[in-house]
Length: 458
Image 1 (cartoon, rainbow, N blue to C red):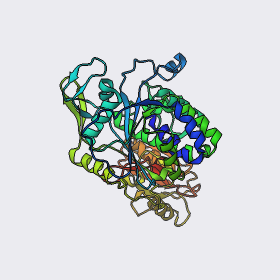
Image 2 (cartoon, helix red, strand yellow):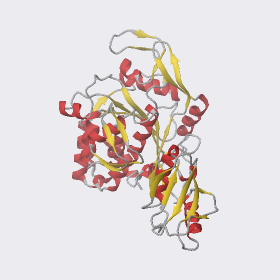
Image 3 (cartoon, helix red, strand yellow):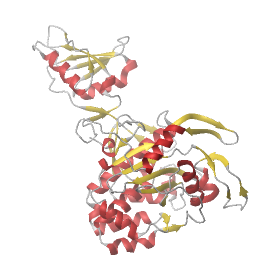
């Protein structure tokens, strides 16, 4: 996940500073040769492919940080996060594809970097490729599985991630529900939060906040990337040479990259992408065909969908966008407060709880215009004026009720056992408006793609 800071700071920022500043930072990058002696590689396509990996290195984290952010376990010396970033040939778009760490993979024939033993091609979880053969075997495995040629390699660890988020002043994240994970120590109530480096690391590492495990974690990582890009490009940091040097030097203190990805390449990308914004980014995950695919000696893995994954990688090779246009504001982003359940999934019966003629119809029309599935037939709710708008709901539909109440500011929530799936809204004299709401970003199109601006706080 630390690749997010690399993408936003190195690629996006270089265009706003002088050549001397960027060149002076080149010496801070650790160098690796992930393409050494590689043969029979895939043919290059249009645009640029960068393999970005986050390792679990924690050697330079202080004892206090290890305890506070639950980082005390032994590192696995593997990649805990892996993404392909495709920068379009015209530098107008970045497509980010997450590769699940438990993906079933077949590592090519190689010599183990630790033991010197020769290995034939064999199955593993893809994050184990780094442990067996470092960056070179990781690149070979990804190219073998995707058919995409990697042009560059970038590797970031925990330390630079935390410090870079801090030097940027934190990153804003919105959560529609409380998020807690005892494994990482994450504890966020519903709402908007400005995460510092340690909290951000907890957020992108958490796998136990719900039942979605690693797939949910990847969605949060993508959401965080979009927010971080917005923070970096919208704060003016990247156009200020002094601030840019501070941010970039913090990041580069623990980045490793191939020899070909140096200051000149970063500067070239930056010049053409200086106006890059979250709306220019799109995020997808390799389509999964089989969950829990068992492999003897390895355990449960994720098997890619052979048809959809090949098509996704073909789209990248041909430099085509993965997202389809959507939304109501012309940018693919639905405005409004973030809620757990989309309005389109919530059924509502409206009642007029006052003596105001037409109030029930006004509330029904406003809710329907916002996306809620109203009956279209508002009813009378009593003879005396109700002062506070009331939302009654069956406790089994509590998440829908909270989402509906968010759209009706100041309304009262009241559980009613046995009410069923249709929520009941009784409009009171306090009613003023229906506030637009939207569910947390969900993927669209064949590859469940989310654009960066869909992931930001309203």
